[in-house]
Length: 161
Image 1 (cartoon, rainbow, N blue to C red):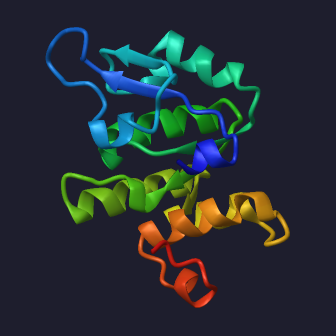
Image 2: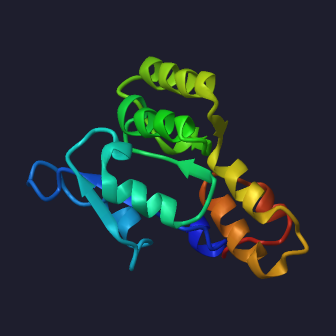
């Protein structure tokens, strides 16, 4: 939703949906991605999929924000490859999970050592909003903030009820 509010291009990838081995993007996310193309692949590393990489490059962006299902696989491998190609990469550390806390933490460290920047979901929202003077996005920003666990929005008078 934040990407839509702030007009950030979205490149969505799935793995092994066409083969029948996996399912489509979970409905809780898919409902916010109407009209967004999904690039299905067989490789664990999305960066090894030509269509996916072409879609990323077609955005014209040099800063990329990544999230994934598994930190140590679906996130780590394309992040490392994107960094090698000169992209500035941000990983949303609390929007991905590992097979264990240790696996998640090790993968985050590996990506950071390679040059990725770890951020949180709320931190990303704040970076997108940047200035309270951008009044047109403040209500959506506060809604996102509150829905992801922020409580300051109620103090500022943006209670959703």
